[in-house]
Length: 306
Image (tube, rainbow, N blue to C red; front, side, top):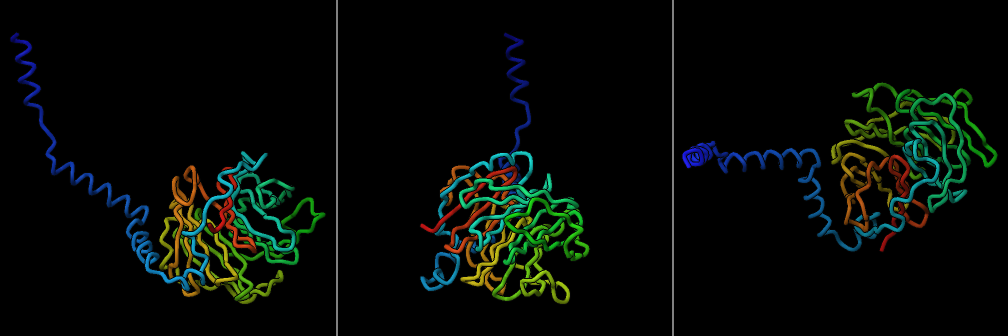
């Protein structure tokens, strides 16, 4: 009995954590998450979306209206290659994707079937791809800080970086998180480039050939409410830009002035996603408005407006 009483007395003397301290810890955690995921910025954008007029929605891509059609289909045979970007080819009605781990260019069907694999000789870490048209494709190597414009035909079996014009993208704030996004914008005759971290946008004048004009120019990136920038797509119908972030699980629409228009959270339960996209690395759109996404290591998605 004495031992039990002593145990009870000892237990009663154990220090208790004040409720106020628990609330402080909870607030700190929530503030940290809000900063990391930029929930405050998304919340304000969501509120703006609710007041957008029908005309404004029709004049934009308007991401909230999209719903998953193909949800995380594995790209057969690419499990160990890390799909890093995606671009639509209007001429062939197919998609091109680059593999960042084992360097090659893959041509895909619009339903995510692998049609062919083209080895990339001389590339270290291809992370971005953009179809320019007329068989020209821009490939960005993040590790080498290079953009190469290659020519691809139905007969192409392999590509060697030494055979094509190359453009030095210059140093980045974080050399290990350098240029990763690239998109062709024929409407404004320019190639758009994106640095991964801190997220930043650049343009480089071009005419759709393998020859670029002048130097790249820095664009306003103030409204890139994301932790990192993975990929870009320039929509020709609206003139708007889609920016993808793997770490923020976010697809963001920006207008011609760089203002936020709409967004899509790439997480389970929203827009029809059965699971959160693990690491979204590539985005593009087809002529009919279908959005295509790829995620590391080898997952394929397509979304259409409801």
